[in-house]
Length: 71
Image (cartoon, one colour):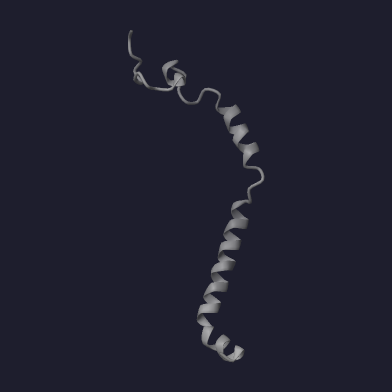
């Protein structure tokens, strides 16, 4: 039994000589369908910056907030 250049424990796609790009279009299409419901980069960035600004505002104005609340 001759070992493939990729080794005896390599996935069958590597042993077949096709590399990991065999069927790549189908796999990418499948992934795109599976992640279609996730929010985009713009939403994630905007929501994180908004949260950071709110936390910074609460931290910076904590003494004034305590005074307004009577604490």
